[in-house]
Length: 309
Image (cartoon, rainbow, N blue to C red; front, side, top):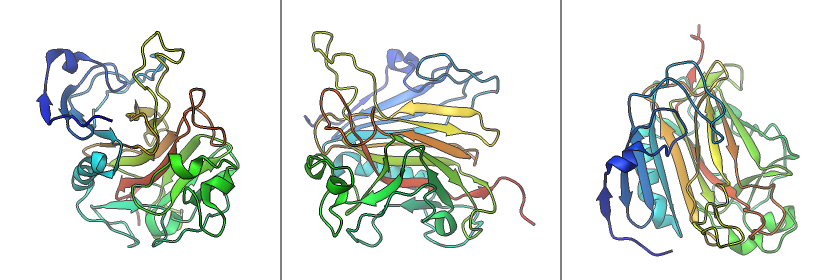
């Protein structure tokens, strides 16, 4: 991927382009550097639209601040991730019990640097009590695994595909996170220390992905030209309604990294749905499938939906 000179671009056309999927466009600032960074904020409009433009909501829309970046290596997204951390909450609260009024939580799947592959499970409750997050999938389960190696062979063995050892990279070594027999992962939030008994909401959620190839910028002359984006994050409020949805930026080429995250001015996200790639892991990552893995998750400190006694 060609590295671009740092240029600040703010144009009327870009301000009017519906980059995020809601009815009223927001003001956008685009910065080109090693990767692409986009931050947007605005007053919002009167609804939310999905990628097909078919689903709206009657509630007044409040626009979050959006952070996204993509590129061939860690340096391509590092600055954006660090900026997101600062806005989300300067303090990483680790495994401290809540509720805590501010700060953030992070999950990097690495277990202090271990290279074991965990058996797929759903719900995935490893961080339910310590960091207030539960993950589920409609597939067989969710697993932490290095791309290859370790006692169980990593993704190569788990998903029976030798190419997975070279086409995926990590933002924080050594392990990635993936659903098995599905490309969908959902997250629910709880007050840390409550062991899933106190439902919570967060102000923001962001995630790192590896090998997001689509859209690849190919034109209509290419057999795969104009293929849609493969990876997206959907955010839902405490009433179950969709409050924001966007595709994750791509950086075609093996081992690339992408980041997407949003922050609202208050805690209002109760559930997140991630679609990672356009097919469940297993097939080759080629012109037919865009196979994507997940790495670090970052989210605002979980706040109780209902007042705690």
